[in-house]
Structures are given as structure tokens and as C-alpha cells.
View 1 (cartoon, rainbow, N blue to C red):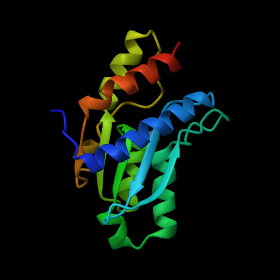
View 2: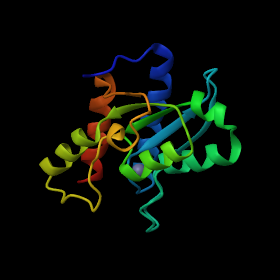
View 3: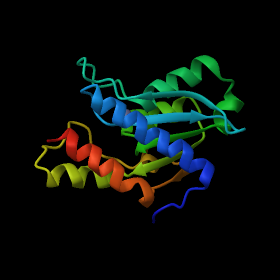
View 4: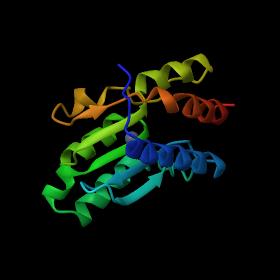
Length: 160
Ligand code: ZN
């Protein structure tokens, strides 16, 4: 089921697309994420930084570490992570371990896996397990149909 974001949520999701595009422009992978507190304020944002050879440098993982270092547990639980692509199992686990709250993603891991397979990209070493199968207590919304085309375009260019 696709999720219909509010106008305010769309602002954050559009920023995720921008960050993903920044990643691609920097010869990295097109993924971007934004951490927003309960009042709607952006606290932290990042994009994929795996081009240097460390495949764990996902923005959702950086957000979890930033939240653990800078937020009280109750603030983490009330925060929302917006992201261009559904968390991988590593990032889902990190999100769960630090007690972050809701996740809103544009493309699901399954959609991305299907897109990449269609482009002839071999599967990665980690299974595309849905967030809720890793951290069942986290509220999750997505995919977001309105921004899917933009992300498909970035991923298609990344695999070219
Ligand atoms: Zn990840």
C-alpha cells in the first residue's frame, strides 16, 4: 500500500531525493535520509558515503549513531526518519537499538531490488528484509508513489 505524505512530510522526503542526487553527483550511491524531531525540526541529514570502500556508510546508520550521541531516549522515540529507500537490515537494527521512532521511506527494498535486477545488477550480499521483520515495534510508512519516479531515475543512472 502506497503512503500519501502530508505537505510537511513531502518537504523532508524531497530533501531525501536531493541528498540522494548529491550522492550520485559525488560518484556515490543515491540514498539520502533526514532526521526530524517531534516539532518538525531537521536535526541531522546525510547521504550514502560508501564510495571510499566502507559499505556500512549508509545515512540511516549515521542517523542512528548521531541520535545515540545527541538525543535523549524519549526524544529519539518521538523523532521520525525520512529516507529515500527503505532501511537495510543493518540500518533497521541500528534504528531499533537506539530507540528511534517512525520511518517514512520513498522506495521499498523490494522495489529497489526488482529495479536493480531488471537493470542486470547482481544482488548484494545482504538480503532485502523489510524493516518490520527486523524491528517490529517501529511504525513504518511507504512507499511514496509521488517521488518513486525521481528515485527510480537516480538508481537507473547509478547502475548505468
Ligand atoms: Zn543501510
